[in-house]
Image (cartoon, rainbow, N blue to C red; front, side):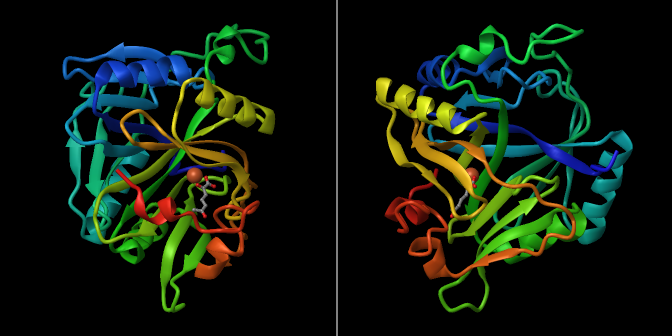
Length: 311
Ligand code: M3P
Ligand code: FE
């Protein structure tokens, strides 16, 4: 197997202002499958085509935003090795006990210089995607409900010290820098897209004064037609849309940004390209992010909300 170490995004835990409203939105409108509830009052979801028990968790709180973002690593030995590597690098790590999250093994937690809690874990119960064990059909009835994403794909996080955070992801966790945007002065980087796999990105950061902020969690759809269908579902349900349907120049994803009822931005998208270890990072100037179409290739403008609205 070629993908080792950190394999992929595994779970995101998000705060919503009203639990019932959040459940309705993510289950009925987004079309996620509810897989469990725990003693802390958290609600667990997965997409129809994910095999592990959960990938998206919500809890009720007074403020919206993200509690943590987790990556699944290859196995327990990898988890222990990465924990040692993070400590050797000078970061504090915490072990969350197995079962603290439903159907999930021990998690190693650390806080990035941007103020985000990141988790690594090796075990989550495989519950399957409701297709037959042998000779499965390409989709099933769950794939028809709501926007019906196929996976929780990545997140974009806002906070300070993105340069130090980049070093942790690339030097310790083995991520690759795939794309970046320079500051207006071209003396540093204002945005970073990094991959642990051969996707265009698994996590992204934007430099921002306030730590720990969420820009969006993204869900992958199968086609542009499904993205346009998601746009119809958003309008039918009076969901506030931020940008799109359009294409990002950065990563080439075809996308919609919109807000859940608590104001957490989410993305529904398709596409993007594949990366390999010989990929040279693509660079956008700050002007290029706007007028060059980095953010919105169709309209070539930097929407005000992109740099200002986060939870
Ligand atoms: C994504 C994506 C920007 C591009 C963002 C890209 C902010 O969110 O999923 O490809 O220019
Ligand atoms: Fe995105």
